[in-house]
Image (cartoon, rainbow, N blue to C red; front, side, top):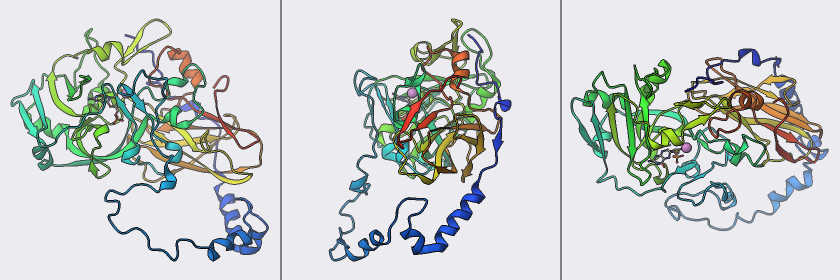
Length: 456
Ligand SMILES: Nc1nc2c(c(=O)[nH]1)N[C@H]1C(S)=C(S)[C@@H](COP(=O)(O)O)O[C@H]1N2
Ligand SMILES: [Mo]
């Protein structure tokens, strides 16, 4: 096993040349625009060619004014406007042989907050999504415990509840881009992360209940679907299958874990593990076992089929990286992006999302000149641990070509690496944990392209 990794290397010196933003100048300009009112609008303004005549039209023709609308509960479970029909999860047909063992991606290019609506949460199934009756579903906790126990859904809901907003990211997010540009859509370059408010029971509360043997150093969780997906999760004193100690901070990750039954206030969706899923914040989402039926406390890792064949990373020197649990700091600009082109010269706001499995996002720097100069973006509240954070920065587009990119730094000082740095350490044979800086190219036409820049 090799410890060669970018993950443990804070690259605070990589965060160079950050200038303060031009926010004040931008504000002054917007105020001037508002003050000059209709005259300025008639002459066109920084946001486009708004003319007085076109502004007047909707006031005269108002087709919905004289009809009755739909009554309440005509749609008992509300759905998005019919005009938003293209804001959907998508899959890549050539990526997997079927849709049962497959992946769908969240359309972040169309989202404006940090929360992923439940119907848009990415999906990753190894044997399809199953429908489980909560009346009969049970969670077994056994192994190295004083009192092995079976919990019904009612039992779990009576226990003290825990609520937190966290992202979930499949470590294969961005996998298609390791060797070169592949997908001209941010849905596919970054859509295997989603973020929700989760509610459930803390694992540590359940551990106290069943009395976990202090000699237990690992546990594993198992789902009720056909995939038999199991992952080993370390606790204090855990050693790998060769007797090498697991990094101490990784042995603390379970303390954040919960058995979640609610997602954004409502019951989990079947695709995301209804009625309960394991949730291990900050860690590769394959550890967050859906349709959870069993947790077993043990004193060595299972080293399952998945752990020896799938969730490992072959490195350029021939060694293999294993048990790389955390999703390291990552960020991407979702406006503009290949799915959101420029709509004429003038004022814009560059917007994006950043997240880190190590904790809070500390800052995000944005470059509009291919990484030569960086400006600090504004972080939008709330800024939470192991959660998506939104950032924004005013941008004046004069019609020139631009290479735009964002670079996240988390509260540990870890700086999101360049793809060149990642390839040097990890090569291109891995499909996991690609969290490198993403560049988009704004063309003179206003089109926005996915690009990979030399030395970046
Ligand atoms: N039982 C079970 N749990 C599972 C999986 C699965 O196929 N079966 N897929 C895992 C993987 S690889 C990922 S990335 C996440 C995806 O969670 P989501 O589908 O809710 O986005 O669930 C994990 N938990
Ligand atoms: Mo995954």
